[in-house]
Image 1 (cartoon, rainbow over the protein chains, first blue to last red):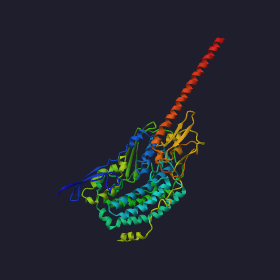
Image 2 (tube, rainbow over the protein chains, first blue to last red):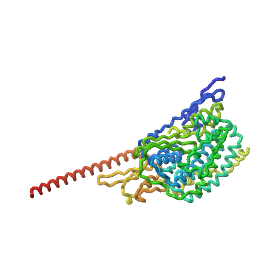
Image 3 (tube, each protein chain N blue to C red):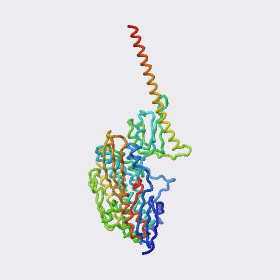
Image 4 (cartoon, chains in turn blue, cyan):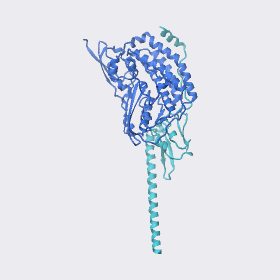
Length: 362
Length: 156
């Protein structure tokens, strides 16, 4: 047995985008144990939602929990509030919510892929992926009026309608994007340099993934078929618009890349189906009721299962709001998956988890 | 190897980025921009102030009861909730114009906090004054009624 060294990485580090701290115990460059600390950005959002803001305003507050999956948070909160108010939203609003969630998934997955490339030392691919990602940001801006904080879902429906010319431009841009995605798929799959850092790195078995309660692309890369879109039908009709489960088996960084890239094809198909079959109805269900009782909602954010719990007491202010973000579920497995890898692969592995610490610590 | 030649080919391509100050970036037609206000149409119900999530709208009131609208573009999140809540169409509306930057002289944070508190205080003062006047009027009416009754009694 060689001598052991402890190497900290984070909370501020050049290869980390988020305030995340890992302490690696290494032995001859091999990682033997990892400790993770994720609570650096506590903002007290849950408390603010239960004291300062009225329940209709909370959907705008939770949109600021995370910049990347803003629409997932607002939609999940809107759904939980609708359950408390006991209202059903119009069908068109449901379809528009799904449309924006899928557009958001495209830009979030491409961002993650680009950072995996960058942290693996492939700067040119990082720039290429970011270049191809730009179209999804512009489409989101055209649909929601803003690049990052969409504020699209509100309690009872959606805030804006989809204009026909915007819908047309989405279809056109997606058609242009498909060959670009094929090109990215080819590079991520077959590039030899990238495979050195990605194949076999950060692998986790299916049994471990199940034991450690992993969610999202991280779990699907290990062969665990978990996706909230496959499990729930009551709030958003995912299967109607052509959802398909994507899984890989090896559970390493390469498999996570493949899951994300293949999910993009599914997202594109879902968006096309939504636009071609968009039902005509009102956008919002008006009600004057106050939230009462308890409710929970699960929603598939780009990083995995997002969980909302809310409790109302027939007043404007909620009694309790609990947010459980996907990264929080993955922290245990994140620390586990480093074991047995080279220290040099650590940045690429961290990027492949797609950690979102703003969601986790709220 | 294929990637290497492709990367080499990129040297001769034009950059994909937009040269921002000289070239306009993509802005959609219905961009969420500044909130506009039409004083002539407003019915002064203060519903926009009530629904505003960050509290970027506040109404102050002078002693005659006339209300004034205040809006802070640095606090506003441009969600359009005020426009949806407005019962009078066109009184408050969203334009496609991006908000300009704030200058130090504007004192946009501390000045706004002070203005916000003052506006609430001015409304409270007006309400207290109104209540006092109402009480005075009620007392005067009561006195007048009592006097009248006495007169009636003495008349009998």
